[in-house]
Amino acid sequence: MADKSVFISYSHDTEEHRSWVREVAEYFVKNGVDAFFDQWDLEYGDDLALFMEKGITEADRVILVCTDAYIQKANEGQGGVGYERTIVTSEMMGDAAQRRKFIPIVRNVEGSRKLPTFLGAKYYADLSEGSDTDAVLDGLLKTVLELPPTKPTLGSTLYIPENPPAEDANPIELDAAPDVGVGTACVAFNERFGQAFPGVRGIEWFEDISIIRERLEILMAAPLFYDDGHLAWWWRGGRNLHIDRFSEIEGSHFLMGHSELNVSRMAAVDQGSYYRCFVYLEMNADQPTGASEWGEADIRRWVDNFGYASEEFGLVDGTLPVSREEYDDGAAIVDGKPVDIRDRVELRSRYLAPYNVIIAPNCSPINNTTFDQEFGADMNKILRGESSLELLVEKIRRLPRRH
Image 1 (cartoon, rainbow, N blue to C red):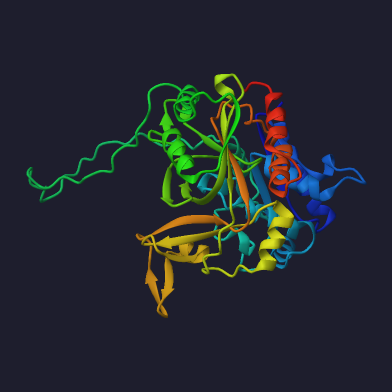
Image 2: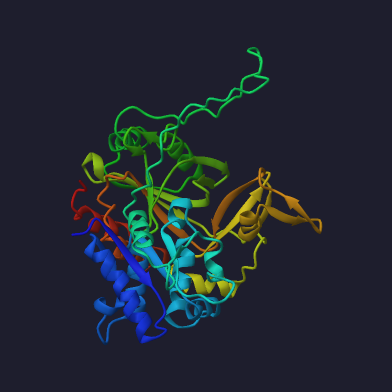
């Protein structure tokens, strides 16, 4: 079985274009990368929406073949391309690593805009006629396989500045290196879990926010990085991210990565083995920041499509919310004038409908791509009151150990 996989999103412009895209898909497969591809994975009567959702969420990378027709359909929300745009937009609300999952290919685009609006200014591969060389395809393959280009060793210069700085000049202060814990992340998480939830066996619920805060401070204290990786990840069925920071904002609000979590209750789960313990968090909905246009209809549509709704925004000086677009541009309109915010803004997101997530180490059986889709569906069912954490825990108990 291939170690890496891609999902190929494209529009059926012409039979010639379909054949060309198939050749690209075959190129990946012949070079050891599995491909979710409609021309060989779909049969008449199959659920097309399910195929698109499963492919986009489960594949390691998503290849988006941008033609003039594709760009128009994406921008206008038409057909399968429009539906895929909705899924991709949700997936791209993760951290930088998650956004890098999506790789645009430009194919014979005649318009001045080479990409649909939702892809912004992403760096793309040009595979237009005359440019679709083996070198470009090879570079694309190496990106999917996570093989970085070879960088030459830094040499020494023969040139000396005319006025070298004095020896007693003030040195430049470098940012301190992040704390790195000794040992493995999986064992460290289990030890932290025991310190935060002593005596817990099975499932224990917590609803007092002061107790929740106390236990999370123990579980998620620094260091959050160990010799073999991050202490913990958050898992949500295809939207799985390592946790590089965790702090209390105020009251029931916590900051995990760049996401604001309005925690309502928590469960500690110990399934007997050191690699099978985890924490379940459930969040109340927050109000939109007002930096973007989020109405009740928008929130309902997102919940209907994905089970939850989230707003991504920038926070200037820790107080002023600005839109995601202004965050990307590094400038915002303040009192009617454009203001440079590049050194003052950080990325944030908040959930506008109830949400839930599991915190567990990378070695957890939850880290199972074949379980992602079912896992995400079960988490949504818990939010709707159609299932329970207890039933999900029983499913997780039957998952194989991750090696």
